[in-house]
Length: 361
Image 1 (cartoon, one colour):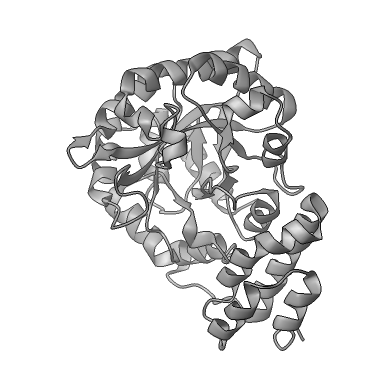
Image 2 (cartoon, one colour):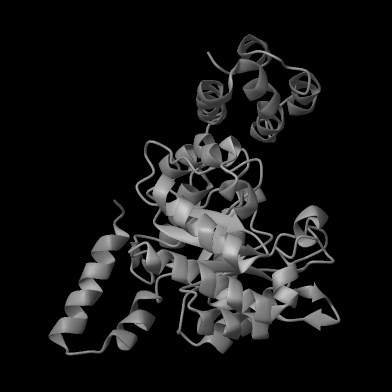
């Protein structure tokens, strides 16, 4: 799928021919900033991922990201409570894109029993390659249920939650990893990522992703990459560490990989309107430069996304949802500000086609 697989094979042969143990192989692969990743039993060709983004990383957008070079994608977070109540919307969220061979379903909840039951339902209803636990969402309605970033503060409960999901996977006879996404802490007076990471590993988590902002920060201010660097050093190769936060351009991903030593990076807001950012980042990591994406190609992607959303939700709901997405696609386009004034009122596909007619020829 990607040429990095050849790199992995080359180093694997080097390892075999020189009788090197696996732990000797890993640093050799990581000499290249773009490299394969192993998450428990899951092998990935590269280390550029789409993060779980509420209201955005549905199958329509994830499919574009696969085409745009993403190595792995996460669904938007799924409520374990809603899943156990057989909520139809949760089933829609978990659907794979047609071109998505491997992907993760992210679930959230604050009750071990509910998370255990939800795990079984995820495995029954999907062919996902990984289950990720959200222990980082700062939204009050999530936190007040004991889920999201509340778990980063209550590390004992975090451990029990992870154990319940790991057990749920095992009891279903599945062979997929369980991972967790955390924040750096509750606030600056309660930085708990070290304890959370140790607890997660002890409970069976196969990888840790950290967004190095506190719950109090929400999505404001700067993320602290020093915390990511410290987490990598703390974990010391026991499980992969992935970084998220303030990655808006390929150059940001390169800087994070170089500075922190994380095994991979997750694009969240940085991928909005730019599902090609994965391809561009790989180009940068491998060649030192990358190609700009033509305006028409960007907009064509937006209309492809709209088509899938119309198929899934109907034209009215899809076009309303695409307002924020086409606003993202229009950034950097000459006259984009004026376009966005029209985009926020678009109600049909024809409306969008009229707005962008000069760029679609």
